[in-house]
Image (cartoon, rainbow, N blue to C red; front, side, top):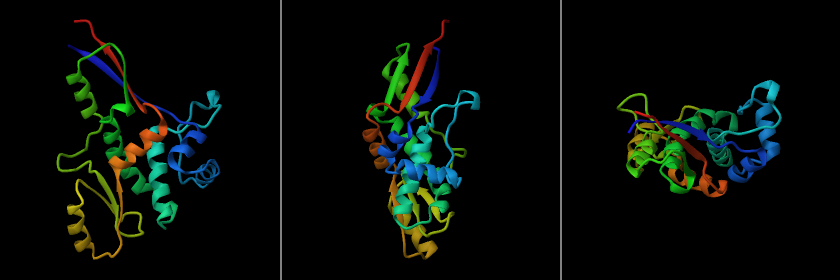
Length: 192
């Protein structure tokens, strides 16, 4: 059965973003003013309200976690970007975070769509479940699939500090606080 799929990420108001991420609307404005974060806008002629994408919500959440742990927020952009893929993948697997609209397809096809939400650029790369920062530098970060993999990284780096974000837990937190689906797949079955 041939069909097409459009993935639509929910957008959030500043107040919704604050409730989900813990980043107050005043802090959001400050981070935008300082160009620490950018947000999704409609074309300038249609711009009325500030809107945050789901990707922005993930980034804001991670930036807040690491800044609360003592890292300078301006150094968290790369770390926050590295959390997007594994968190988006985890969200795609959660029934309460996903909605299918349009034509009906069977569960096997839905599972295939969910599994194709995120792809790495190289077969040897991992999406990872855990995002780990082992220093205060912008590039002192990695993604791993399990915590045991971090021990080798720590031994190699000889760093005494480690901050870890479980991207599955972050996805669950975002989905719970968003109060409804954050990903929508519109399905259109093609006539043969």
